[in-house]
Picture 1 (cartoon, rainbow, N blue to C red):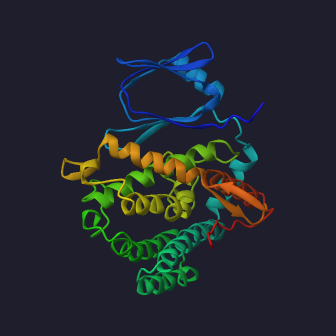
Picture 2 (picture 1 turned 90 degrees about the vertical axis):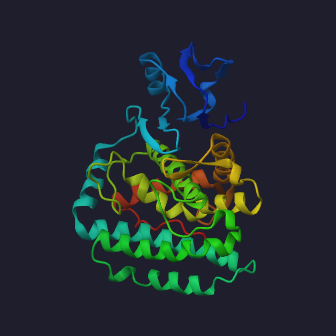
Length: 334
């Protein structure tokens, strides 16, 4: 029997999600759709959905997180099934690494290093294709050299923010499409189409990282670069920083350069620009394809998917907390 490939299920239709026997069923006004539970890794809901305790118990039994988004594509919360892999020892070690300033800084610095190094990989990739990006590459390299000077996570965040501003300044050169001009980074609400794409893509990645953490011994509530305070989860935000350039940004460039998204995939509402459902679906399709793409993993000596790479980052953190091997972030070099 072949291996069943699990995947994220996206729901855009209003209706009811329920359990029937040992499977999931989505009931809408138009149809009854059966979803074999064996293929489900996580569920992402963008619609008005009715569910009950029996369904939640089933999802807990099958260890399937349920993530909710509002109509603008913003993440609003997760039904996080009971942690079945959490280790008391690892949670204590995570807390210890947060409370000891020098240990926290070691991890926070590593996350920022990974983020900036992967920004540089993206810039160099497009420079090799004829884009004039020398100025941006040198400026981002300068920010990378300042990491050792930071004395707090806030200072590291500032360096990462400066590097990202420079990096975002290259987006118009890479896309050469006035319909998607960057101008400046705006979040809530996104001021233009490029910002809408960045915000939506980052949200998808935050949730992907959360789902991968769920399947390890780590606790997602303890982060190191992002402040652990009122937020429910922060470790997924730390991990996402490393992969944003490789996953979100590369998907954006591909969609724009291949003209798979256009101005009619967006709407203006409440002073901001947002993806329509059709645009969200196109982005999600490209994003999931990117997650499934494989790259060579030097240490394993074989190719692994980007989704698997995120899980492997979790395992690297696990070994770090146990003082088995210092954490070094994944950096794409070729």
